[in-house]
Length: 424
Ligand SMILES: [Zn+2]
Image (cartoon, rainbow, N blue to C red):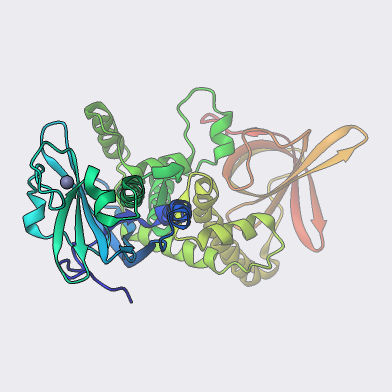
C-alpha cells in the first residue's frame, strides 16, 4: 500500500522507468539517503506504485515487443522546524521564469506557483530575489520567505541547511527522472526473452542457424551470427534515416516476418529451456536453464539464448529419430559397396569426438542418414572447419568398411570432403 498526496491521482503520480533500471535507482536513493542522517532528517523512500507491461507490434516484422516498466515515486515526511515545514523552493531561471521544486508529500498552493519573486512574508521588503522558499505552518498557513530571511524566520536553522535539504530532494527527484531513460546508469540493454526467441526462430527459419563461433571464423564480413540478427530484429534500426532504410531493406530482402510457427517454436523452446533442472550436470544446459528463467535477455546471454531454438529442435529430432529407430528395429543397414567412392546426401552430424593417438589427434565424426543408418569417419586432426555437430551435410567419401558396433551396422568412410554440385 502506498499513500497518495491529496492533489495527485495514481495516474499522474511518479515517474515511469524501465523495470531493469530499478536496482540502480534504489542504490542511488540509498546513497542520497546517507545525507539525511547528516541533516538530522528522516530518509525518503523510493516506492514502486505499480509495474506495467507494455506490448507493441512492429509494423514491419510483426514481432511483438514486450517491455516492463515501473511507476516509482519518492515519499517521505517533510521535517518540521518550529512548526514550519518546507513545501517548495522557487528559483529564478536565466530567462526570468520561476522553477518550482516541491518536497515529496507536500503540495505547493497554486497561488505560489506563479510566485512573485520580489515578495518576502518575513521582512515584507520588496526587492529582487532569485531564491525563495514556500513554507507551511502546522496551522495550515503558507508563506514565502526569501533566502536571506530563512535563518531569521526559522530561528536556529541556517539557510545552508535548508538549501542542502532542497538540493537533496531535488537530486532524489532527478534520479527518478534520469532513470526513465533506457540504458541509464550503465544498465545493460535488455530484450524480453520470449520476444527474443521468437525473433531467433524467425531468423533460423529464414536465414538459417549460425553460431557465434562460426560467424567469427568468417573473414568475408557477410556471415553474421543468428544471435546478432535476432538482436537487431528486436531493437530495430538506429535513429538515422539511412539506418532505418537499410534495416527495412534487410527485413524485406530476407522476408523477416513473424509466422505462427515462429511463435510456437519460441514458446516450446522457452518452456523446454525453463524446465531444465538447476541440478543438471551439463554446464551448457545448466546455463541455458538459468538464462531462460530470466525475464529478459542481455548482450551477455543473447548468444546462449539464441542457441535454445536449435538445441530444442535437436532434442525434438533426437526423440523422433529414437522413435523411428525403435520402429525400424533391425532395419538399419550398411550403405554402398566397400571400395566405392560416392556421394552421401543429408548426413546429420550427430557427434564429433577428438582423441589423441600416437600419430596425433584424430576425430571420430558420426553421422545419421535420413533412414537412421550410421556413417562414421575418422578425420585426421581436429574436426574440419566445414563440419559442426548440429549441421546436415552432403559429402563425398570412399566406403572403407562395413562394420558392426554393438549390433548396429555402421558404414566407415575415408577421404571425406563436402560434396559440390557436380558430385555423384
Ligand atoms: Zn525577507
